[in-house]
Image (tube, rainbow, N blue to C red; front, side):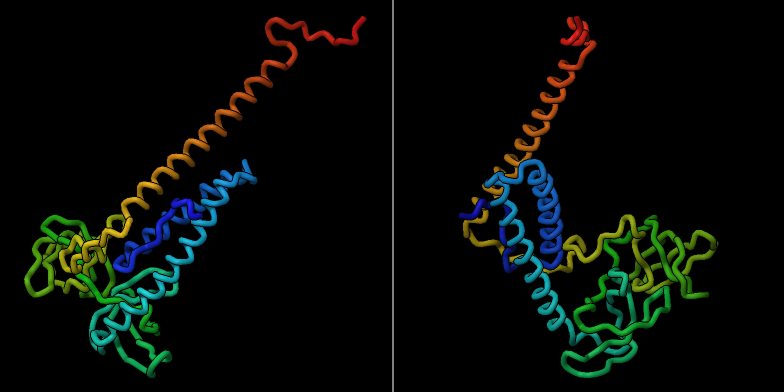
Amino acid sequence: MSSGFTEEPQDEDTLDKLEENLTTYLEQKSQVEQLLAADPGNSQILEIQRDIEEALKITHDKIEARKRKDAERNERSYVVGSHVEAQFEDGQWYTCKVQTIQGDGASKRWTVVSVGYSNTFDVPVTKLRPWRAPVSLKRGDNVEAVNPQNNLFYPATVDTVTTNNTAWVMFKAGRNLEEVPLTHVRIKKHAQKRFREADGNEPAQKARKDDGTDKKRQKTQKWKERVKEMTKEQEAGRNDWNSFMAKQKPGKRGTTGKSIFAS
């Protein structure tokens, strides 16, 4: 019988939501492994571990399926000369421009060049996603923009955002405003939040059906609280034992520390 510690992701979950769920399950897995190290035979914790492993597998599969579905839907927009986001070998996503398209079917590849870096690399459709403008840019925002003089990213401050997908920016080392395409502007990495619904372009998610999800969440929360309680109980038990052992050491108040074999 399932413990309900985790819940299966729903079909309408976005890729961002699925990846967020994956992170949560991995954190839960680490917590449970720590509990099992202290209490390997605990049946409740073992049941939780099985649920988490199952949820991880389901989520991995759903992420891959969602990537394929999204890629197939967006493929028609990945034409030569268009701007996209491509996943580089370091796992990060970069704004790129499509240079060529080669092959067909599973062997089809897009040759892209990264904006602001000029790195050229080939990727399959599963490592492409539509380019989105930086979220809610406004006057005074600190960003990084490509300097037209050398095509490299530099710190800049936004002055004006136009209706033509460009922005007037002031580079930190410059004195004049420069107009650059929004494809050449990015939020600083520490504050970068892209591909979220906050930009208003993401279609609203369909309302979830009343399929018992709320009950699952409530049960999940109860199990999380139980895991925390078990962790506290184990910690309290260790503290009590350490305190008990400390009182048995010779030389404490009320003891002489004398050997029982002394004459």
